[in-house]
Amino acid sequence: MRHLVAEAGLAGRIDLDSAGTGNWHIGEAPDERAQRAAGQRGYDLAPLRARQIAAEDFRRFDLIVAMDDANVAALQNVCPASGHDKIRLLMEFSPQAESRVVVDPYFGGDVGFETVLDQCEAACAGLLAALRPQLAD
Image (cartoon, rainbow, N blue to C red; front, side, top):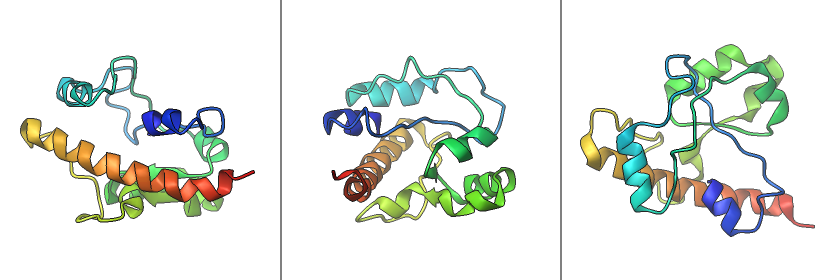
């Protein structure tokens, strides 16, 4: 999403970040397999470090995007009641989605990470298209 936003010249207009719902990887870099697959597509994930979603995120962001139903449930458990309508599944924005959630690549080998990238690229393009009308001057 960062890559698409930068390519569109909207880096100064769209504030985005990434966070997990659990605390087990805080401070860690992305999985090596994810970094390798992303690097082959021109994305540098090395500077990223995991952090856990915080209450401030529900105030700071207009949209909280989750990869799967377990993340949606975890987000609903920690967000204020007024923030529930901000939570959406990423794949809702994918125009030709074959799945309503992003698959977990952890046990799928290298091909699993390629599938996740395919899903995320399509859905992020759809998300950016959905945001564009709100950004029109």
